[in-house]
Length: 204
Image 1: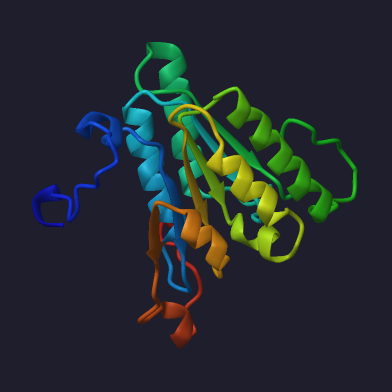
Image 2: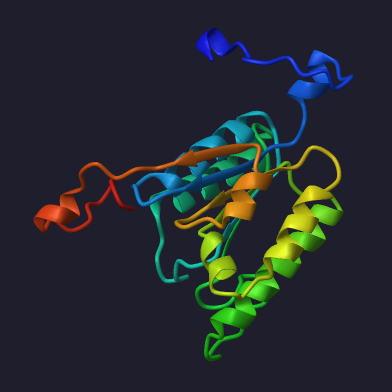
């Protein structure tokens, strides 16, 4: 695809503008580093376009605070204060979703994953966001915590031009088939292989 040119112009009856504006289902998978990082990079582009961005992290603990979260919360404040960019919401499943967390409760990750997906379904139905980042969502699907048929059906029928990015290893083949854009991160070399632990600014 040199210079952004498409390889095929389908005979689908759509104009170039209509085809360009179709909603994307994007999957970042594979064993290499960078799946979430790439998704957050796209979210930055969405923010710059003025889209509402919703980030939902399905595995990372609520105790972990990655650098992107702080940066996006800062951008959300900038939007509220100046109108620049778009609104951003950031939710983590780890200790109960932020909209329903109750102090002292033992985490039931299966139930929380199901609750998170139901909330996303509600938001998709009302077109709450222009871009959704479902970070590490492949895992609750693989573990049977979220029904794949429901996911595929919901995403296929979502209204408007809502874009969805799903990250995580071992994405189900049916999810890859449904996606419009799939990138597989392949690990060639990683510092972990030589005993070097994660670094500030590189891993978080």
